[in-house]
Amino acid sequence: MQIEVKGRNLPVTEELRECVTRRFQKVSKQVSPLAVLEVELSEERNPAIPDRQVAEATLHLKGVTLRAREASRDLKHSINLISDELARQVKRHRDKRRARRE
Image 1: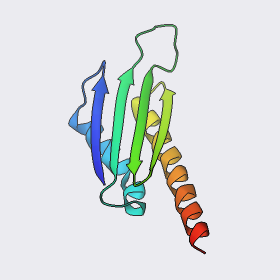
Image 2: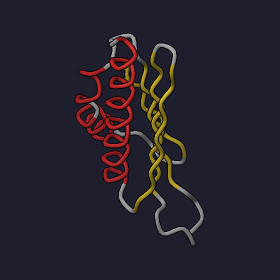
Image 3: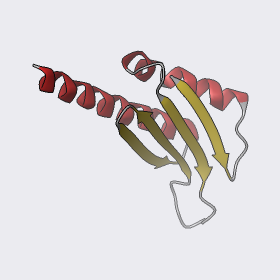
């Protein structure tokens, strides 16, 4: 699986790239090597929003696109939340495909 990490309103450090790669290893084992994962990390500029650190993930698979978006006070926590959400979506998608074949 190819992973692309983008930053909006904040720089993407090597530490963040490693964190994203490490968290999405579980998902990468379940999908095709041709799948493309785009992770966009951003920070809300509005001071009235308490959960300012936003992480969005888009996983392009053959025939389907899975998305997850989470916001929290810590960017790494947001990354953890979207990786769990995408893992659930991938598992559900695989189960549906298996059920159709049987």
